[in-house]
Image 1 (cartoon, helix red, strand yellow):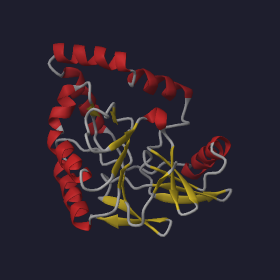
Image 2 (cartoon, helix red, strand yellow):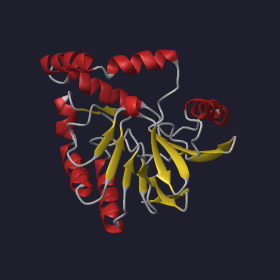
Image 3 (cartoon, one colour):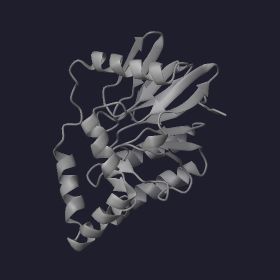
Image 4 (cartoon, one colour):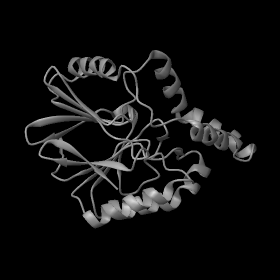
Length: 238
């Protein structure tokens, strides 16, 4: 049985929370509490680095984690793991977490079938090998072991690299990239009507072959999030 997307549900993607910007995300969580929506969809890369096996990443984000879990105890919440935040089912007690291998997930809005995903599927073979190795539980335990030995050096280096990224750049030829993604959705999920993803940080809506594709805004790029209204995503600012 499919879950339903409810009117006024909130969608948040790619906030990339870290020690430098977490205050802004707290403001968003406070606003969500005030709005009291019927659902919250966290669409991945909510944290710049959060992996249950890497204890330091949990410790550094524990205040945000507790706040999200507290809100989720009152508002049904869903978390679609990204490429920066994964292995999270043991981290959140009250949030329904979908691993990458479980995505896309079907939800229904009236008679509209909606596929939800963080968005890092159907990329390149090289990326598939990389992400599957990185998210392997055995590999994570080994990396965590060595990270402890070197006093969190590995995690710190990853975070430093993440700080250096330009997360708000426009992707050239994005429409053609999405056209190919839509072909994959149509091939693998023939009855899907709408796709909602994060990952790319582009904040665009496109239609191909009667399938509406929505790429959510990245919260880190301008403090934007989405509200589901009458089968559409309405973009709001913090």
